[in-house]
Image (cartoon, helix red, strand yellow):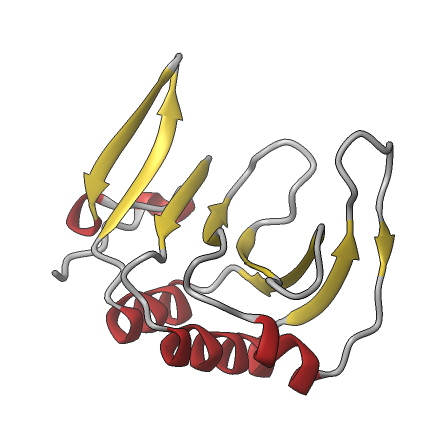
Length: 140
């Protein structure tokens, strides 16, 4: 299962706060991945440098993975860094339904989407569920 939340409604300040909140419970990885060149490599950047390059105009993402290909179960946040072309800060957070609920409430993640067949389908968060005992989330 692979599900995505849109972050376009968040301000720069909220995105930076989300980054800080996620770093408290997850593992940070910053990667440089130039288009047309195979592979990527890890980049060492300070939190201050990452924070100043997070912007609301970049493609920032919040993805939920459970039993999906080579991805570890959990949440991955990604922040494309505006002043660092082809560089993205990723934060991997282990699966935890209470933590997921907290992030959803705090950052107003009201909609999620997934690819079904060849279509991208949108759903309200009230229809979000996880495979673990088919836990249904009931707020929003």
